[in-house]
Length: 142
Image (cartoon, rainbow, N blue to C red; front, side, top):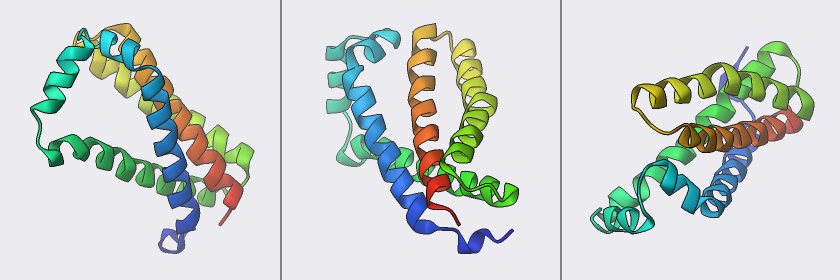
């Protein structure tokens, strides 16, 4: 297995698509996501206003880099299984999401006394991102 020669184009396209999905998803659920955090929109706006430019943009960069890493890892899984297809990519992504992402978010939110709806909203966002990444990386092939 040689990940040094990964299909970088597929990974970057997948990361961009997942990043755009996340932006649309959270924009459409802003009111519910904010409420699930136990805050008001005004509180969130005040918190954002208090941040520097770098502080405002850093989370978006972290998400994009994370999605590149997710794409690279899913590529490695598909390469290891020699199973490049949209279907294989989405199935592998769903298994990874269920086994690692959902469980981690649920655990962290339970210990943080966060609302269940926050777990639902954030987990579904990551499920969408994983499925998009898996479909694109799987569909592009090695």
